[in-house]
Length: 117
View 1: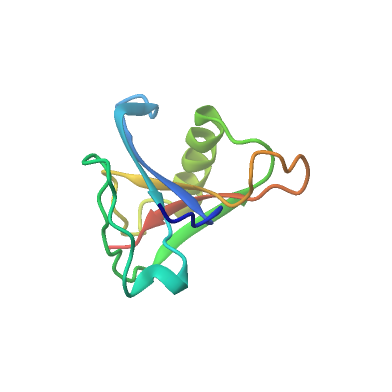
View 2: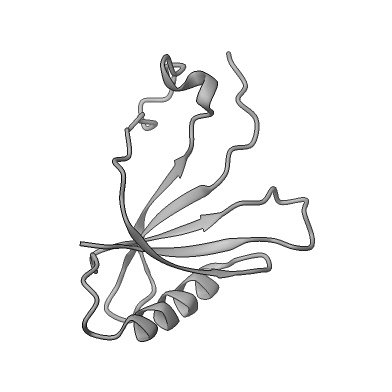
């Protein structure tokens, strides 16, 4: 019964297939606002879980526009190429992040994150 409003970023954990596209399995994460973090509201839907994300170091790239799966895949490919073979990061998944509400037409911010190992 508690509304938290828009949170940012909305983070999608993508599990890339052999061809780089998203597998059917994705995980969507929303940041719980600071005022609710000590005592978050309990989800009424059993498929919603509250998890604490540990601190991490990431490799990141940023782009604008209304992001689609193909945009995230393309920017993940560019980030992978920029890092080369020497950088150690988790290759099983990456994070796709959007920071803006759907009604914001200009100046949109999206990011792809690889988690450093």
